[in-house]
View 1 (tube, helix red, strand yellow):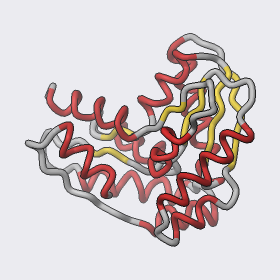
View 2 (view 1 turned 180 degrees about the horizontal axis):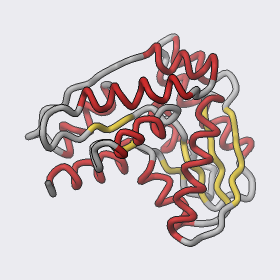
View 3 (view 1 turned 180 degrees about the vertical axis):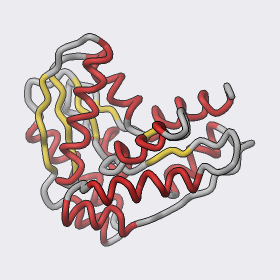
View 4 (view 1 turned 135 degrees about the vertical axis):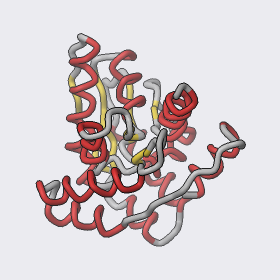
Length: 204
């Protein structure tokens, strides 16, 4: 949560955010995929976190973001997935979109999100998945520098013919400035997503 705390301190120092970490939900998604039961649990968790009037819940997990947004069916506008603004910008930048992820479970939810954003914008896109094999082991050991460098190495080696690259997980954001050899822009979700979330929150 340090990444989001730092961004909030920069972008909205007057606000106090509450973090809710449920690591077992992601672990289950990695084991079984997104089941109906898991989706319901995430939705109920979001609705519980948004009990206060005017509350806005931002889901920072790209694997579970679609489940979190289902809470909007019960309370419109209560949930935002952190990567939606990134996907919306990506489809504006080009039609060849490489989706890079450090966890395989994130690739399909992100692809579906990009295609949804493209349909909403009336644009055609072609997505290419790119799994950064081995990078996540650095993250699990707490080696963020090694994690980001491992991601950047994969991107610089394997990205071809892309108009834009998106980093599917918020934790990957630190790899973007390391990709000096890429001609395609590399988008990450934390700053873009928080900017939209803060604008939505303040407009209430």
